[in-house]
Image 1 (tube, one colour):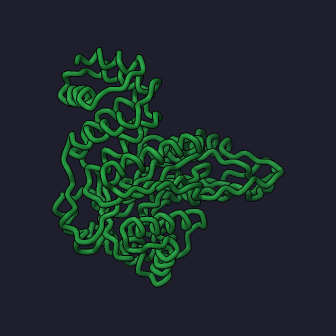
Image 2 (cartoon, rainbow, N blue to C red):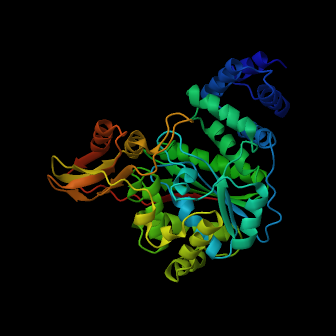
Image 3 (tube, rainbow, N blue to C red):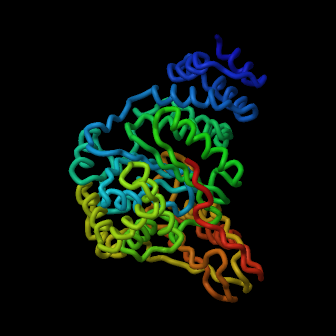
Length: 435
């Protein structure tokens, strides 16, 4: 079938077969199908959506478009983790050492920042000397040796998704549930893990702004995983304010180290401990989530979690003093400015996306793939939802450089805060768990 006929079929709301979807994806990869036809197809999907069966086919075809990362040489169960992205989301830096210190191998391929959400690889590269480009052999060898490795994604895994995602990004078709689900799961299924734990963010700083769409995405992700014989668990978690207090590459590494030492912010620590607990349950190391969480907390208390992070930093060429004196080792800007309140009240809302964009315009993110990142800049959130602010009291701190757009960052952070007289209703960090 010609591409134009498949576009027409989807435009009219009909369901495509596996062969029709394969023909379109393979045609696009081989450049027989041009960008303008794939863009038209993506827009048809955006308005007409895909059935669960079509999404399953699309995921499978994109997963098989590139290499498969075989993890069978690593002994024991392998559990992968993925977050749909948020502001201040440095969970991988903490969850990896937590589960590895409990005996569950952590072999993770992570991405870079684009837009207002940060990237794990950029954060790790804040650590002087830390190498994120590992060969497949070195990656497997390191996990076998110390139980943990976090490396950059390779273009050889799910290349069809990489090409289609770039087009979605420039055609306003990113936030469609079946396209998001197939993009995430095509990469997860290209890696030989036994189970997958997903952190689906919901709120102002997430792709999914409301609970209904987050539930729809989480259920679809879990269903795709199960259909491919992977135990899949999705946690729907709050992203209606930044996670923790630090937003920006070095600042987030600093907060991750503090959390592994048992001194992190309450919301961030709770999320990390629960994600790690669910990973241990998914890997079969524990039957009960409560017992798994108890074990995770022990690893923080006895120092073995932070030592596991040290082992990874050392193995990947980084400066291990980052665990002893992070503020001296990490490039954190000495140029700071506090944003102070012009009126008093209680924080009823923080627009997390605006905080993420503020960090980006200070130099901590990318608006284009080729942009260079400044690891030293970012935003420190001094007041969170429910806390009271008095006139003249600082509620945020900017870390900036001479190249930062300081005026815009000031405006974004100031306008992100909404004050009122009533104490807002408490929102749990974990909204729902879908198995």
